[in-house]
Image (tube, rainbow, N blue to C red; front, side, top):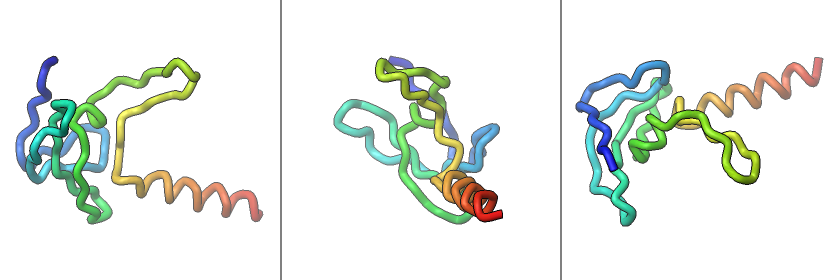
Length: 86
């Protein structure tokens, strides 16, 4: 399996995450990265979660790469609730 090559300080294109360091690989051999989101949240993520292509699993669920720490989905939910109230 090919390892993704990231450098510290690299901002990943099209998403809000910047690589700040590396962690030990997990028990499955997946490379782990320490990242900081534009909102300020620090998180550890699998490198494959940031570089994967959009796919559909066997249950029909669409799998997309991570674009943020989760703040995007929180903002989208707040907009959805606000639009329903109007």
